[in-house]
Length: 304
Image (tube, rainbow, N blue to C red; front, side):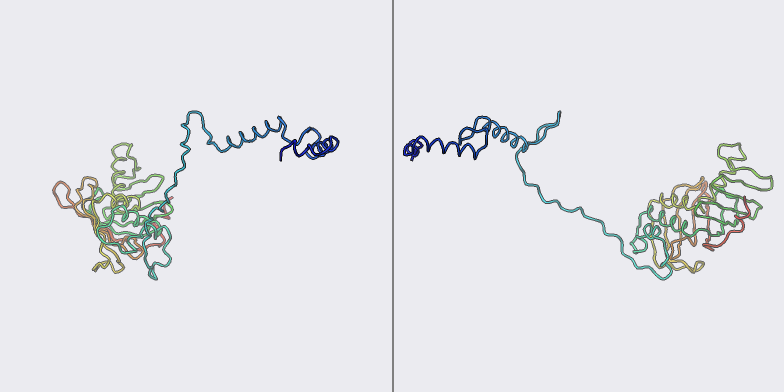
């Protein structure tokens, strides 16, 4: 039924009344039941705003993204390297977290060969955790005077050592420098000094290669390969737990090193160190016995 047909059956007064009711329902500003021009413009603006809000934002200088929607592939989680599993012995129960972390491959009994840098880091951390020790050195193949030497060493929190030799030498090494005393007096350790100071610095470096955690770490890390034996047969080191043998270690102060062997205890602190090499085609060897971990060092305490 059309508009005219519907309203044609009613009187003009009735039609006017219906228009008034319609206008009241739509608001005071409206004069008819259909949308006005202003309403149509507002609806068009709202539709345009909604369409724009769904379009991607484009930054100046950035290509507009392809509006095509692609289904993303499920992300595969990255493979994680499992941490080594090991069981600590009663002796190792108080081993620090730093030492456990550094010595994890040895604690889990990784087979040979073992990365040289792992061995160096493990032993260095174990020595620092040990705090202090004493050492007996016998050498004919470094810049230390030939013969026997006794050392008292502090490994943490800072490194310091005092080395006395059977020939009457007394060497002190610390973070603040060092000095060497002998028959001809006392001289400071200084590589940039005169001939006497430079010679004293070379002697100090030879001692550090055998005693300092940082120097031993570098010495072991530069080996071409390191073999490990978890059941060493030792006679002179009852507390030995692991023997590590390095090959192809670089030259140390003119000594071409053929091999290096270090035996460690259950806490991976050195018990014995043997270095075998040649100096100008002459066999050269150095051995160090480490003991007294954590003991007081009266020799170092007497040095200001």
